[in-house]
Image (tube, rainbow, N blue to C red; front, side, top):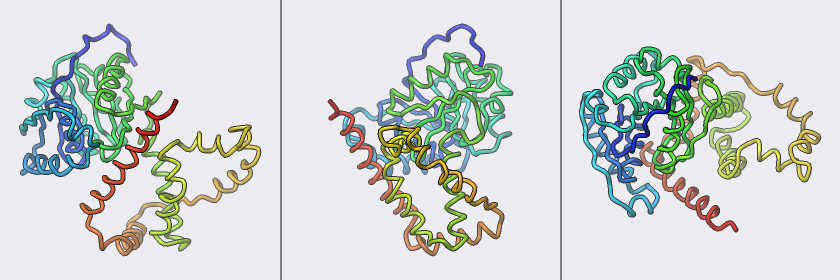
Length: 320
């Protein structure tokens, strides 16, 4: 990453949200709840009405301190991304996960946005180096990958491309912290970043167990949500295993469990997501959960997420 002169710090009062699907709408909800204005842009028919409806639907699921505690920012809409970005102090791009589309869109955003404004992409897997390649000012293009739903889940993964300057990464992190996010900085680019790679590893093994007839879809899910997932809300896998090693920490874990881990790693499944496997998994999952509507499940998820986050925040505040 390059390291030219420090850009002038931008006081963020207006954020452009380019792409207003599930992720973009959730970002908008969070940003508005922090009293900032949003100029949203999406070329799809009916996008503005869907965005406003989604923001209003998500609003009650915000933490109480946000939903009730301050001034709600103003939401504006335009179909033209350049118009949305022209007066923005920060840009969060959320277009479909197709590289050539991203390259062209970010090029147009770059051309319309003031030179010292961060352009962040919510891309789930793509490289910033690839996405910034057509920009006149690639130094301010960064990854700002949230976890769904962004208005509740604190994580945002941050990394730059080959031409990104560290000062813009630092600026992005400051903004994300301001709106309650927890930035995680990657030291180098990798496809899928951190959290999606971790999820993919668990998902692949879940598919292997399901397709091998080891357990039902419901029980495979419960094995995570009622087991390690409960701990993972508090600490990641590395710290979890350090505790498993007792007083000797990580070395104690290896001394006790290295042979088991080696056997497990060698025995993990490597299914390929071809069409027949997708059909079998889809059938099993829909039979397990198909009686519940997606929107109903998402609402229930958000209520429970709220409770988990409130408990974590309370625990932090109560520590001596």
